[in-house]
Length: 110
Image 1 (tube, one colour):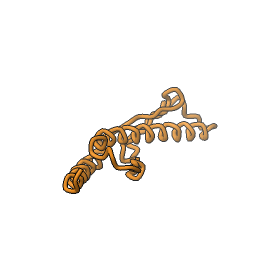
Image 2 (cartoon, helix red, strand yellow):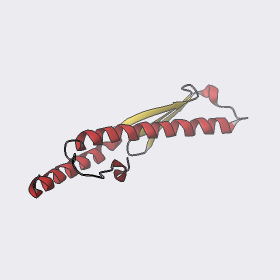
Image 3 (tube, one colour):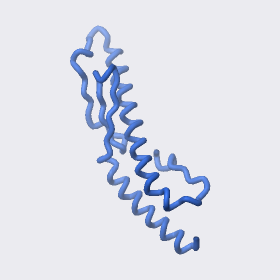
Image 4 (cartoon, helix red, strand yellow):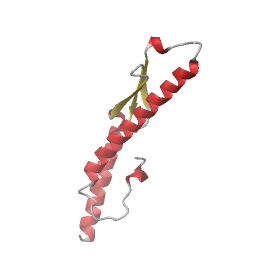
């Protein structure tokens, strides 16, 4: 690959990554805990956009249980959203940067 082709592919990848970053809010995922009694929805930009709590799980004598369920659901939603974003990014980059050793998606927050 000559340098002009390389830089052209890098510019194309940057444009694609900009589009992906702009679309991160549209990539959503759910995580649940307590057998679905708590459901959290997150975006790939790591924002929690919705939390649904079944009223049956609310026990004013045991707030720690609800806190734990919310944390578990949120963490699962964030992990799933991150996984979806990583898959999308891998699809775009797999043909652009196949021969660059050490290319690591974690440097992009994924």
